[in-house]
Picture 1 (tube, rainbow, N blue to C red):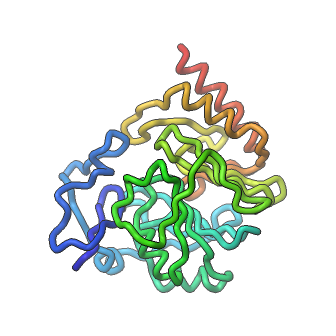
Picture 2: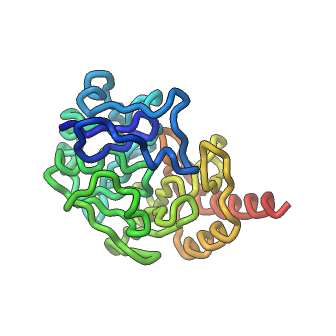
Length: 268
């Protein structure tokens, strides 16, 4: 039986004989149903139509689909002291992408920031030898293809090693996660926030939204909580959710200024 993939958000579902009646992720007010209604594809159909983009993004290996399919996030390969991490996922897995990852030492675990980027996470795990997928338990209900490979973590901070910590930022989704990598990829460290705080087009600030496509601002209380959670974590770089949307150098100051700017704006 096919594993259908939503064409608007890119989420892969469990096996069904016919396409699901709806995509709960897209029907949620943080997302949207495509203007032509709910449509579906399969992994085989994606592979026939698309070639993955596999290239450097600010010093890290990135993997992504062309921007005309679903949400244009890219995954990043992080060679850390907690093992080799695939941060985020995309809907298509290819032999070329798996080979590129294996050539760099393989992947020890997949970690994803929030449900919009779960995509074909189980497909990726299986292609990489059954590696674990780490998600925050607060977003467990959004998993559309359950698997024994998925492991849920809890709490606000989860230390994977001396240098790598997962932070439950919340706000966008209850379990929205950022990854803090103290030692890399450059001296000064980096923050990988997914959509919990999103690098904006000027690449000098981040912003905070409950829904990005529907322009619903994040609650100030959630933003203040996030600010408190990030206190004490230093980073020079902030790697955004998609190609080139990164703040390289001065990242900590940029995030602090963005907290001030946002809270002043929503306070009127």
